[in-house]
Image (tube, rainbow, N blue to C red; front, side, top):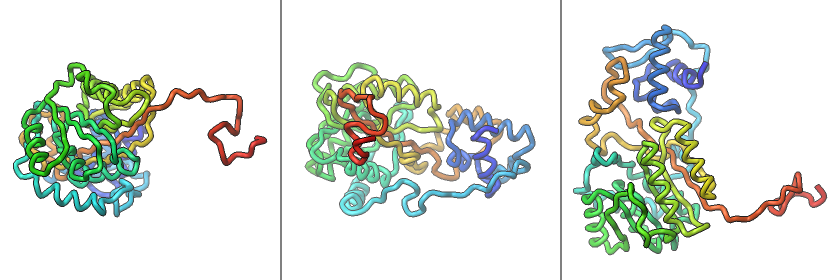
Length: 334
């Protein structure tokens, strides 16, 4: 039995679930999830109650009922917002009245405010905030404003195609005296020359389409000081299959970048932060599901935070089995 089937069956053994709850409790793409649900329904293992919009388990209950092993305190993210990151978050959320709403034409979506603060906290831990030149490729989340309010970074530069987003960032930067530079840019074109090899860190939540994703990634890599720096991208499981993840991994490897951290389902995109109810009828998923699952009853869309770092061109001797020049707690004679 496929892993995704086990995830669905054990979730339904715990209790009845909506489609959107099932999405959040498995780790495959939406297309794979829908195909599996169709198969399980046809096989008489699960049933959909059209009145309650809930899936129920009929057969296949030999698996353990789902057990949530994540930390309840941090929701499994390993970080909490505290100290100056919490104080800045409070100030940040209080000055967002009138912010541009997400534009579906630009594939925009807003990360929850607490998760933006968590991202900044993680970057701080990794040494990627203080005295760093940071490029944001796309910033409808207004992460640049939050970073600017922290006051740690040497330089913050935003590239975006959306004039409204850039205008709002400029207004808030002016009001708060933040050192944030902005530039309207279509990333389908090459990165402007003066931004190449000019940054220590780049951050992006790229499109999930493979062409857009790799384009954003290439522009970000091009922006890093040669042989140095780190990048952060968000990538989902529900819209990016493992072959797509492999393509991302491959381009990183070709450019001597190594993944240092992959934080699963780190950034949540709340339903209430955009006018999504007007969009669902136009999403392909609604035409692929053979039943009316109803609108989302929870926040279900999240992305994984991936951090990668440049690798210096240093050769590693392969003459030693147990030890080498890095192994300082291995006996010399081994």
